Image 1 (cartoon, helix red, strand yellow):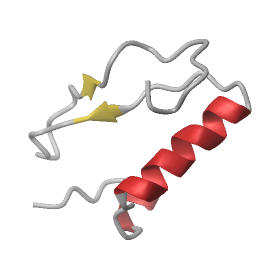
Image 2 (image 1 turned 90 degrees about the vertical axis):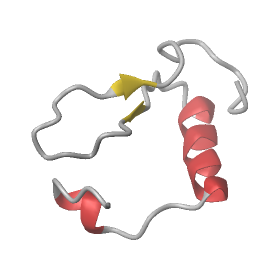
Image 3 (image 1 turned 90 degrees about the horizontal axis):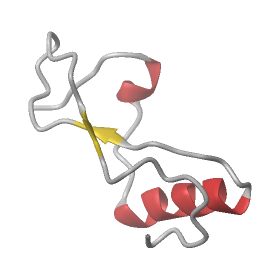
Length: 63
């Protein structure tokens, strides 16, 4: 099942390499990022998991 809520949800899925490049770009620009995900893509599911800890002050995208 593919969750399509919001504008960006209709774009094609990113590959692992593309996701890594997005994270590297954020790290290189000193952005603090959070990555949320869910294993229950029901439209009424408002609670998503936060991957890892908030990624403040990381230097490596592989963290």
